[in-house]
Length: 310
Length: 293
Image (cartoon, rainbow over all chains, first blue to last red; front, top):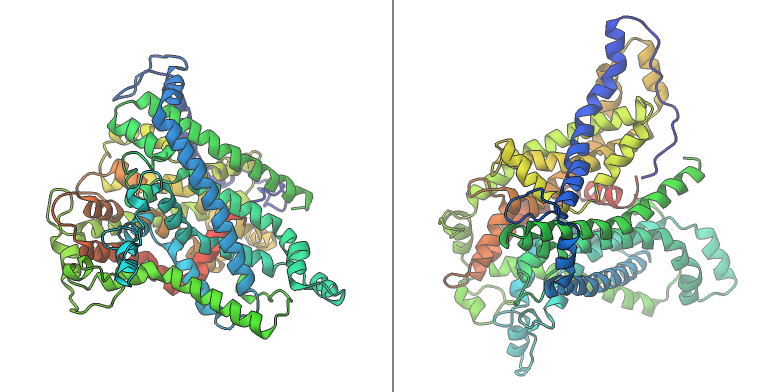
């Protein structure tokens, strides 16, 4: 994503006449609709939602400013704190488990494995599915009435219990299970690309020095995967904060409101509870959360790109 | 990409290798399990699932759940099955992907070969737009669609998907054209070729791979979208994901798990087929979108 310095572009030739001037303007004319759309639909809308978050909008937007009242109300809502707590649990487990599985699988696949070409697509295909499909599959598979619990009991373990999805203390962990299933293969692909980019000469030198495989990975290979870790973290954090579909399909925020996340909170307050001002405030908080992950990352990428002469 | 590069030069013994293969195969089963569950249970009579035989192969094979999911299951208030919604999704996804890909290609072309003062800022703004949480645009978007008379229509959804897909399509093409030799463009310009002529005759012929990556990326995202579909569609423009969720979460009557699984496979099939046919490009798009170009 490096934004390259201005180089090697075509200089508009200095010709005269209206046609030539039109030719000179053409690039801007072509770009203009897209740029205008982004300015209005992204940045304009952010400002609009930001403004609404300071108004007493209920079922429809209105423009009576009420200061920070919505933010005070938002952070006075137990449901919002629950959503933040759930996001913290879900987000951290999701990021950690996906990274561990992703890194583990990438290292294992990187051992001149026969059948890699078959295994890789199997690990990755969940990423092609809609979260609604994933949610549907896991919803019934984890359902104590027909899924895992019933299956294990039918094997003779008649007291086996696995009812997390119906248990308000544990339900958020079922969201983790389904989300990890969906995304860990993709993290594997990111780490695998990182591993394949490592210079083998250094590894061979360490082997000559008698380093064990464990030390080889701990001291030389994994430290070099820093960029892959960073990318994985940014992508997963971004996905976690935006998570909406999966929770809707898997638990619909329940049981009760046990799996509420900021995204489901925003939606229900805005569109079903008619508290648009509070909904807008929660959306602003979500934007701030994502921005605090993404902006430093893009900034580092851009700066890194420039210092590499790109 | 990754597949063609050499493996890390680590040597492993025979026992280690056995462990490695076992672990890899166990994980393959883990990833395949939900797909297997969906498949086998979509061709079973409901009684077999209720009896607790979710992992077993069907004893009485039946396609009735598929038929029901496609054409008779209750979705919302009408017993239409998923087929009208499948068609809604197709009608939405084709223009959304086509328009956003064409615009992305032209934007990428301008941003690399026709730079102007401020073009870097334009690109940075489009890039940042890729990452916003869509919750921040839901309220104003609902208003604007209403004002434009597009509320609850497929055209409205196409507009939404084009606008919020532009950042990524532009990013893909911009990074691809960045590496394209500018000398060729200059030479064509000296020969008198114009803006569109250069694009059509010089860049487009070698854009095959990035077009495939972009189309797959957009297709997958638009097809799988739920948030916009749930927010901005009405009963006759609902996409497949929203209809599937309605089918599965409807609380009335007996839960027809087999029908739900058949419906889930129907919703998954288009993106799954794209993935199977062109997985290489799919992964490339994911990586380009996620990491860097």
